Length: 221
Length: 232
Image (cartoon, rainbow over all chains, first blue to last red; front, top):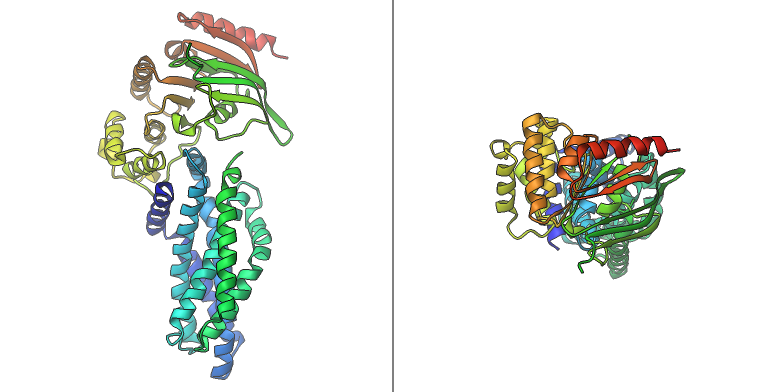
């Protein structure tokens, strides 16, 4: 557990000083909000409210891909990844530390992105905020669990920028299904369907366990 | 009788179409010191990565003190520094200490920074360090958990003569205290001074080995020349 906390601390301090990933993800998300804004002019408020969850998750997903790819690319500098792999004990804790850092950084971007979407599309997200936060938090956890594992697998290949989306996107279908459905209900001010939360819990649990156990092999040369 | 600190039997390592190691046998007695010499591309760095537990051998067996490999007992210095440029020197060592479960990583970091003469730059980010300073910090990182076995891949790279001299003295002291030491280097004189045994690796194969308490530089140079001549 200490290893996971140490890696979480290291990633957050490094990001605070470089602002490498958060800025890149945020610019990308805002750009998507702007593009959608011009692509969907003069929509009535109800139509915009219905579209917002899907658009939001499109921005979240691609911003997350950007951040996940950078997450391990930074570890290649000075072979720092080798330094992590040398740590004694279960390497699953390395996965948990990296996944937790990814979750925090992506969540920061998501909060800011949600604010931008709310302004651009004049959608009040406050009434369903608790439900939306739960769904987004759980959905992002699944993205980070699968994404951290697959980013570590892809990072030593020569075409990691392409490989990560190819490997990750199929694994995210069930997460996106639950997350978009749940977000639609939350944005509409309705309670989040139990089925959506259940699906997210189950998929998150499966991905976390598989990644924790499989990470030992991912870091080996 | 004590088990060897490190024992490799028939270790082979293959990367795609390249065979880096072709059945290496090495035995290191507890507290022993071994120099691995050889020309560029001989497989020295790969051998050290296999010993460190960073790379799995394609075939063969590695034992650590008669048991399974234990990464916590090994300190490793590679070609790269393993350091984070956005963190300060002190933060890098504290982070490494926490990875290895060191009891008081802050105190250990301060101790190592003082030993390496980096106390004055402890709060500076590593991204701005010279190669020599980064190398000294990287050596401190390898020692952060007081490992029983130190694996050093060309540890004198980037060091000026006073720093190289200090490192030689420190490694001599650590060896005298019973720490195992394996290093690769192109400096035969330093290898002869630091190690009590040596292997000459050529094209992934041990061509010559010397195991003698009184290994001299001349003996090592002669073995090196023989190994290069004998290599296919």
